[in-house]
Image (cartoon, rainbow over all chains, first blue to last red; front, side, top):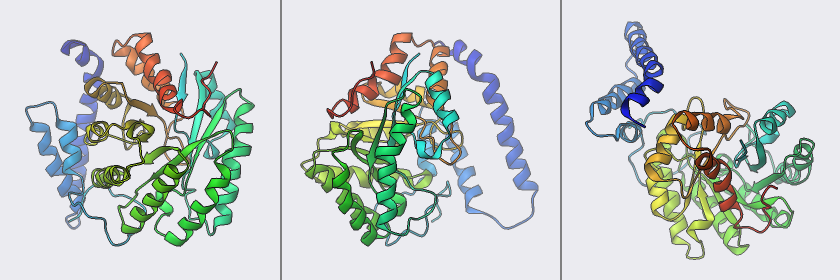
Length: 86
Length: 268
């Protein structure tokens, strides 16, 4: 598909997502409380959107991933959080 | 439109979902063994679950004219208890000859622990000993990249495993190439809040090729959409995919992978 066709298809949807993202950050910033590693990871991952290539999704996912390579001694539970806590 | 749902946890779904899937063109459904949302207390709970997957659920699907296949294992979410896992893996062979069992799955990792790794190796050994296809679950969110790498290494270390007889599911943009480069099939799961959206799955098809990729809804008891695959097919139409190309990935690809076991009968 041509770039214009893709924008015709996806621009409005992603404009809405962009505003949602901004509103989410505004909401978190307005709230009181301690710093949270998830929000720090989120803001770090946002930097990947400024990349000049077409690998943004991959690098956002990499940014939020556990970078270690060895199995952990025991599972701390069953769920995942969505961001890597060092 | 016709499609195959290659990964749906139908025991968690209602008969309305069966009706809607068949109405949308579903030609057969395949159900990997899954975590129930709570830990089963003994091997007997798994025995009953495997009976449900190999006896009761195919009959429920048949009421809607839908062939039902399954995969057996103890899910990675219950793999921290190695003793229980050994007991469960011990009863699986008695079910492998049942007509709707396609192989061992969905095995893999959840939190990437040592015990999970040990149970994964036991499952791979079971599959190799019985010449079974393998369906692999990769971990969620921040654990996916590391887990995918560990899983790939386990599979590579067993020389009996033929890469093309293994599908590694829930790939995303950061893991798809890793899986495909090892010669495995890759699955993309379409979830509203995690894993892939339809649009992203189509991106992955367009970037990495459709030769060894499939899509599934992985519908279960959580937030999931049983019609996610036909919804993605609609998105493909918007992206100017031809009907033939759409058919080749949502119908043809699952058939090509699963036909590696003679138990799988291509829908008429």
